[in-house]
Amino acid sequence: MQATDDTGVVLDAAFEIEPDGDGLALVMRSASGRSSRYPNGLNPHYNRALELLLGRLRDRGAVLEDGIVDSSRVQHLPEAERRILEAPVVLAELSDIEQFRRKLSRAQGRIGRTSDGNATKQIRLRLRVPGYGADDADRLAADLSQPSAQPASGVELPAANQELADRLHFDLPWLEKTVALLQHRKQIVLYGPPGTGKTHLARELARHITDPDAIRLVQFHPSYTYEDFFEGIRPQLNGTTATFELVHGPLRRLADDAKADKGRPYVLIIDEINRANLPKVFGELYFLLEYRDEAIDLQYSPGDRFSLPANIFVIGTMNTADRSIALVDSAMRRRFAFVELHPDHPPVRDVLSRWAEAHGKDDGREVLLARLNQLIGAEHEFKIGPAYLMKPDADHGLDLVWRHSILPLLEEHFYESMSRQRVHETFGLDAVRNLP
Image (tube, rainbow, N blue to C red; front, side):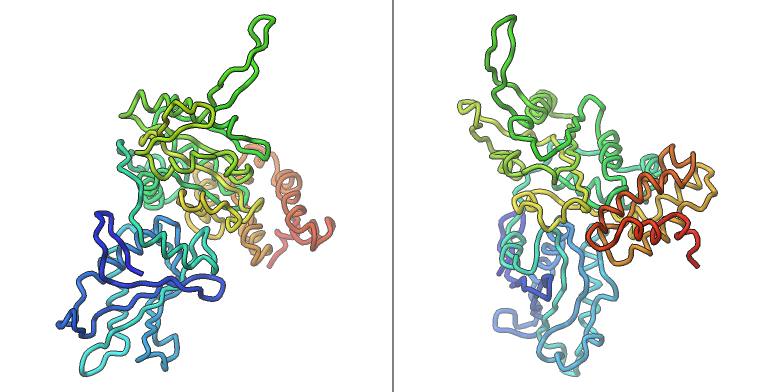
């Protein structure tokens, strides 16, 4: 397959997405070897195509888990000798895709070098892409081959600054990349286990981006509908007479405000976005999330052509302890960029220690949380975030927070594998404190 760049040019450099175990792999063949089309052995489209694909994977929250040279000439070598990535790479954390591509090219060039030059090489980058499993290779390839349908946003979001980073106890570069991702994609989902500060981060980002009166927050739940979210016919009481009227929901009201004020960003925060039936809630609006410059007829206002203003930005939050990201509706996965918040990884990993230092807390709560998550082990989505130990009630005794907030979560998580007594014996505060 070939990729089309954002100007409509089809790049003459083939790529494939293949299943690889329970994940996926991007396969590209460089034209460093001679060919009839490029007799000097250089394909001018190869580097552009690789950078383009890496950028589109970054927009989808991809992680490069491994990378090897996989051409037939070197397949007799152990994988360790063909590796071009030393450690997993979270693409969202890269500020310069071109520089990273150059690094891959340099590593690739050192493998299989011969006296008569390098033959055409094939690289294989093993991927984890939120919303795409091993059965989705063709879909991901098709998605990566096409330019983003997003138009320019119409407004420039303010870059993250040190004040925001200090308030959140986050690394500034991570926040800068997240704001840049929101600028580019318009819709992001912050996902992770409980207590990782997803809603707090969403609200702080929104306050940094715009004014309080340009922010709306809604919380999805299983009975939430399109009529609640956008618009629907509702009974209204006028004196003693009941009538039915078209009532606008939070998204329609926000859109009306944004259209009247196109120079200012508007932010919709959708808390617990994965708890609702998303196709039912969004309906035809899914199309507008991707094509902001298009207009459609609405279910309840067929004569009223509606478009979603370019200055609306959506931040969703998703608790992965409730539902795996793999189960999220595929239409949503294509339209939102996913940003993970996890206790084991930056920026969440260091939040509690920074917060404790800033607030003069010396009770070692950050050490206790790290030990607890170590005990939980490989259960990635069952880890506990730092927010539980940053609340005011934690100052009245860590035991209260542990007993009434943390242990009930773990009882639910391990309901099928451990008794309540076993959960308390294994993960109780005393057990954690007594770890060597």
